[in-house]
Length: 168
Image (cartoon, rainbow, N blue to C red):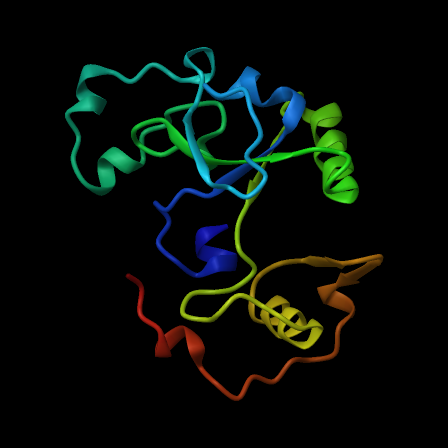
């Protein structure tokens, strides 16, 4: 997702969105964090054992070590910036995560800002569409609408933004 959608370094973890009632089963926290203001560690029973050799790795090699059953949101120190989701505050997002949980057994999904490297977060439906067309996303859900990229007209971009903004 980092390389194909965000166009940023592959080692950068995402934030987790988790059903409020399941947060303490996955993270060392039992409370609300609807605005991603709290950091918590992945619970011990969700972590993968790291060998002595893997612990001694450095740099990018250390970042490639699988640390938990939710690796996309697990930092090297097992921390994650949590967003709890409840039905009252965000019913559509809650139902999406709930359905994912029913299918996979995992009540955690990736949460990331809607933008690509070097660009501000999208603000308008036009920003959303341009960002969608610039990425390798297949589908876009915007309110009650679902867009299939393969059904969209050819997109012509005036700016080579991938070259304009170098990786960090």
